[in-house]
Image (cartoon, rainbow, N blue to C red; front, side):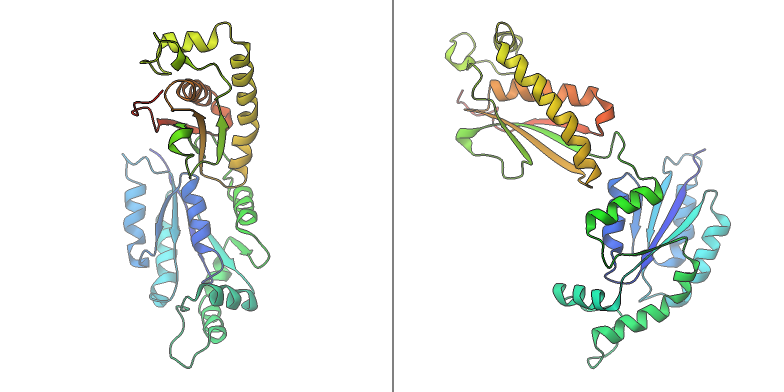
Length: 295
């Protein structure tokens, strides 16, 4: 039986609850947002069920709707859960919270009347959350933190270090003649490699075919050098992206038509990333322009 651990993510509105919840979710946690406290036991029953494979649960709680229910619900959860239950309280100074709400134009959830200002609403929320702050296992003041610094701190405090499934890596081939992919994080140009399109027997094939692969690999030292150095580059960059909190990375390889060279390179690099579990990458591959008629 898998014993689930729980982190209750709470704190001041505007202090980073959503950003923290997203980070836990990116790290593979099962995260439930805005759940009424009365339903916390249902989540625990689901996670602690004998056939459940959920072992890490994040529960995001605010107080604007369920003031009276939160304290007893958390007490019941801590008493009944088989695994540890920790409370993360996110805070920030009032001037910082005011600035954040003014920049987003959002209405503070504790604003009770048209005459009530944001600062007064923050004071009211801070008073209401006082008991939760006192119960918290971890209190983080995000006033001076960027989102990436917050992610780093959560990694350290909760052991969310980048693991082999922390970054989803999309390896993409494309043809420059059809445009560079707008969502690519890295674009590498393969057009310096010899073009199989100009070999009549290879023109109708693609980079997945053995004949094209042999043409590009055998007797082409530049191909070997490019693949080797690209692997070295990605060995450095992929874990670095993971440490900076990036959960989705697109690496695009382009050639003229997106049929031969870019497909071959993308297939090779995808295979290397899939084999190198230590990189912190969960790769998948797509060939954007392989169905086009051009070479």
